[in-house]
Amino acid sequence: MARPNQIPIAEGLFTWPDDNPRLIGSRCRACGEVTFPHQPSCPACCAEDTEDYLLARKGTLWTWTTQGFLPKSPPYAGPETPETFRPYGVGYVELPGEVRVEARLTESDPEKLGIGMAMELVVVPFATDSQGNEIVTFAFAPVPKT
Image (cartoon, rainbow, N blue to C red; front, side):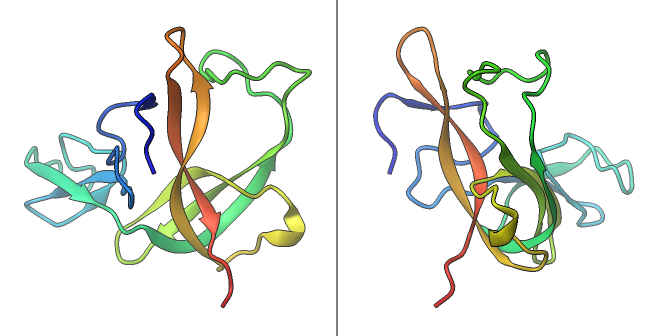
């Protein structure tokens, strides 16, 4: 659940605040192509008539790896230093009938990740800004087996 001092890493990327956040993509009105993040024109047919499209919250892990070193800055803008950095999972999650989304994963242990496993969108802390707001971003977490 969103706290008052949480702000999204970028406006228009995912619904926030929201108890069930969803990524905001775009859908071409001409050909139906779905993209993420939102794009003003269609990469499939070049039409310039797209609309916001809320993506599914659940999908399957299409492929993944572990980010084992601190990314270069820029473009990375995380709060970690070489001393505080911890490896994290990165993968493509295929949302059914829509699109594959590249995202950080909440799990980085190779023994706990597998291609084809069920994943669900979550919102996680990323950094704290100079006003003390917690900046949040999206990630995908493994869906617990029932």
